[in-house]
Every structure is written in structure tokens, then in C-alpha cells.
Image (cartoon, helix red, strand yellow):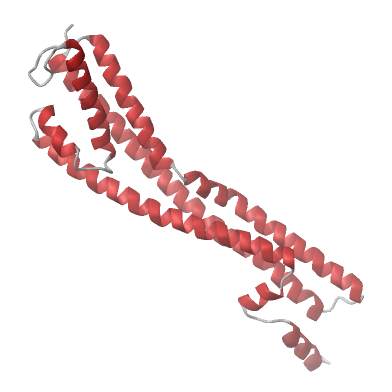
Length: 240
């Protein structure tokens, strides 16, 4: 009897993961397909964001070197135009463009050391704040999908598991038996959905927190840089 039970179990239960997926019910398969899509998109975002953040860090370091070596803001601007992904360079470009606009409006030569008014300094501060907010939006774009994947995937997988177990007990009721050979395949197939949900959620949560922390650091660097630039302008150009 033990050998017959083992044969029944081996014949009806495919031990491979692919076999369990193929033997699962339609609802469980749809859940697995949805989780697969979530996982693929999440990993695509992770790789693209990692590459994007790495380029930003590299260009920020290069721009800071050019910035510290320059003695005039007018000398920094041509260098800033080279760094298309640098958040610091973008803040400087926006700030310098606003200074140039102020210069044209008031007929005061900024690079020559002439003075500007405090109201113009407020305009400069607002323009750089807008630049910081714009860059922050770019940095955090698509991170919401990682957050959604991390929070929703376990529940989607759990739904597939519950549905699969319901089908299993429904089959037990139809057969009138509850042997291991009847119960084990259905429960195993159902639990695959929970495992898939966790597999999609765990990397999404880890990298979401990582990228969010990186974004906060970059935003802080932009705000510090904008404050430093404002201090330079106020110290050298503002008429009090």
C-alpha cells in the first residue's frame, strides 16, 4: 500500500517548478503571469535607474571639480553645458541663465562685478528651487512602480494561493477523499503564487529604499549647492 501511494504521488505530482505552474488552475496562472510582468518591469527599472544614478554621480563629481577650479561664474558655464545628466550642473545652468536675464533687464554686467538688487536675488533663488524640484522629479520617476510592486505583489500572490487552495478543497469534496496524493499537488501549485509574489516584492522594496536614499542625498547636494551659489552672488553682486 505504501508503494502504491508513492507511485500515485509521483505520477500526479510533477516535482519541477515549471510542471507545477503548468498544472495550476487558470486563475493561479493569471496571477503568476501578472507577477511575472511586475517582476520584469521592476528589474528593468532597477537596472535603468542604477545606470542613471551612476552617471549622475560621475558627472556631478566632474562638474564640482571644474566649479572649484574656476574663479568666475562665467568660466563655469561653458563647463556646465558639457554635463547633461549632472543635477548640480543643471542647477547652475538655470541659476546662471537667471543671472544673465537679470543682467539684461537691469543693464548690469554680472560678470563684471556690478551690483544687483535683493529682489533679483529672490528671483534667482526661486529659479534654482524650481530646478531642484524638477531634478528631484526626474530622480524619483518610476520609483512609484517599485513601491507598488513591493506592497502589492505579496497580496496578489496570496490571492493566487488562496484561490488555488480553494480549488484543491473543491476537488477533495468532489472526489470524497483527502489523501496526500490528492492534496499535495494542488497546495504546492497554490503556494507557488505566494513564492512568486515574494520574489517580485523583495527586490522591489530593497531597491526602492536604496534609490530613494540616493535621491534624497542628491537633492540635499543640489540644495547645498544652490545655497552656496546664492551666497556667492549675494557676497559679490548684491546692492544692499
